[in-house]
Length: 61
Image (tube, rainbow, N blue to C red):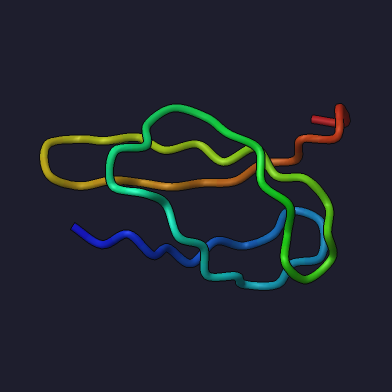
């Protein structure tokens, strides 16, 4: 299972590689390394796979 994921920032549109610890599930907030805006990071585990997506976390979502 990979712990590094490429996500697309919902603010600046840049592809950014993030690290998610192996035991993390659910949702947490992290800032974009490029534009510094806050993301809501969603981590879902299905069988042996994890899926990561990001959305805006500034109240505009």
